[in-house]
Image (tube, rainbow, N blue to C red; front, side, top):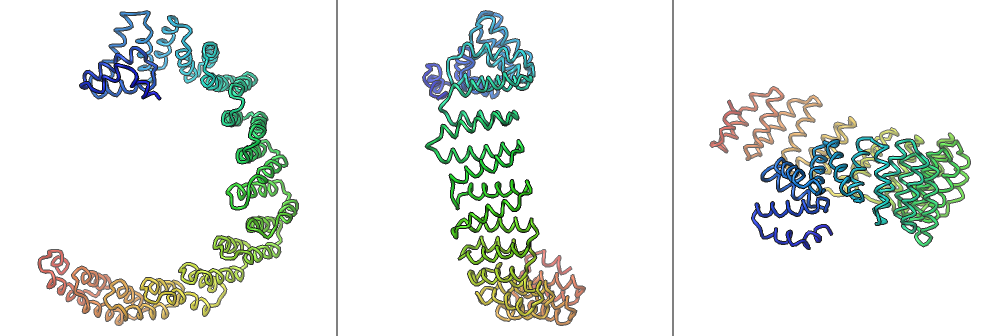
Length: 497
């Protein structure tokens, strides 16, 4: 809108066709005719910064003030320059001088009030806001000003005045839910919690045909009531909000968690268990309810009851991976490893090609002392896609991590036999054999790889591994081969040296 207003100005329209110097002159003309027009000050400032410098504009403004003391526009330009350079006291003097010429200019008055508030000159700021309000006619601007006035009054310790100012702000837009929301937030930020609750009640009444807005206000009211230490009232408000949402909505989960937390914080575990038990319907919302029941029973110290609810959670999970994942974390909390194993087995059945599910099943089998089952679970990773080299490599590393070293080496041998030029595999195979203590066999593995390779860079890698293991005599022929394959590369000769 500001841009369209500028386009309507003849000087602005011409500026688009001017040279840089002419554009600067025309914007300067526009600025000194209306220094508070939106966007003009900033654009003019940019032009001066790119050209003659801001100091030139300041001197121009000062000269105009001296030449025409009754023209407030140069004073306002000067004030805005002082504001920009954080010389707020000088800016205040300029606005004061302008207001002696034009005392009923609300825009000037309110800019002065804003500056005074910034300087914590709160008494004067309050007075200027009140004077500015007397000359304002736009309800939206009046509402903004009442908001600022209330903030200043609150900062001065005049709580009743602040409440009255903010109430006036709301009266200006009595059917505007967003304005009331802003008012509620203003009250909450000022720690006027009773007033914030009252504002939310107004919104709920006003938004009779808007369940989502009502839901949000009931929720917000509950949060305020928690701040007040009114847990019972907060639980009631969250319950009202909950009645306006449904399973699957993020608010449904969040509200239930807040209700549960409020009960637990109050030490009302039995009340929470009773409430949650009434809400089990056999529907999609049961997963969350059972999760909260587990939490409540754990808080009570009844691990068996918690485990029963986890089992029922799993029974109703269907193909929902997220529910199974939640069940695993809950079983971990109750230290029920057999439960974790059962859920992991379900996940592997549901997603047989998922590497993570198979890996985790093997891990829990190890924790249970069942190495045979662990090995079987991990081998399912390979069996799901025997042609995928990365799967066999991963399984080998898993075996190695769990001290099943022969199995780790056996898997890498299979992979190396099928892909003899797979450098990473052969290098790692030799490393595993070396760490197992069979240094001669490790050396033979690396040298066999070097014989099969015809890429200088890969040969250099093999040579580096041999040298790192103090097998320099064996590394030299490997580097010599790399040099023969790429005699023009000086790096290979340096490696040989």
